[in-house]
Image (cartoon, rainbow, N blue to C red; front, side, top):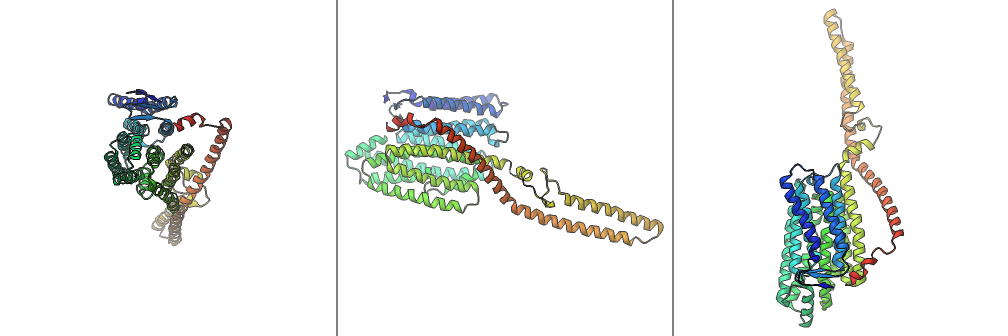
Length: 480
């Protein structure tokens, strides 16, 4: 393991992302007419450079006065976060991208989110983890609020309150660890606690309890999950997908380092608590997902359930379990980002696409993309207009010739009555259309999801045929 006093290579990925963020912020002050796509491309370039730098790490690296620890776990987690972030930014290049993408500040804050979470996963110092957590979280709250809708602001506020509560518990837990062992390094805490027989210490018990609550809030484990569906529903679909992957992988890395260290010194009650939380999270979250009527809320509870599965691997605490955890999370990241991106794309063309694709012979449903009236209503209005003219002609003939125009008047009244009946029928048909619109949308969503799933399976099989052992490069890194 490379180790010296500073070893700036340990913070090089964070320095690259932070430098590009400051550069874009400076450019936006002097060049306000630049397109948002310029900032999106610069962000993708920064992420690609960071990805290449992290991918080039061959062994564990310590640096920055032993605060940073870039081992196999940190390397894999940073690669997952950077790859998912690149996919997320590509959504901003679409023609119908969300309006918050059209500002330079969005991309600046996005890079600072990644800087904070990379510091979290690449350190075993509780103080540095807390600094990285706050850096990433504060920028993320702002990104959610940039969606600039009432639900988005509400979601950002809820996330801020629950995030601040979780950070407070983390700070209290770190303080308790320092009081009991005199250190903020996770490895040193484990060594001192084991040598001093502090397994049953009240301070250590309080510190572990605070940390369980804090990590439970960050990972949305039951019963600390209540903020998750509201935040996912209020954020944009693409941002909800990002929330379900990147912040959670950072939290899981902290959980791996901390809980495995505590298990190694013989804190027996910790395993029982984690088992109970994992079982509750896996089971109750899936049951709550079944009764949701909003797709994003359903996926939010699905994300909570997946957190329970990953927690099981942390409880096992072996090298094989860690390897399985990262394999699982890579597949989960691909599936979840794709699902939320698909929802985002479908909702952008919701009404227009439905009117074009859902065809029927009912005259009330014969609406074009501009919302013009159907043929039935148009014909009824035309008949009314023509008969009204006939009635007027009859009245003129009556005044000119003194003849009775009762026939024309009856024709006019009959036409007027027919028009009212037709208009009432059209309203009923429009109500029926509104009633079946969700079903049609669900059918369209399911059809397109099946097509997308078939393509993904085909590509995955081709990829698997070429690479039998995709994680062979990192086997040695995980064991370090």
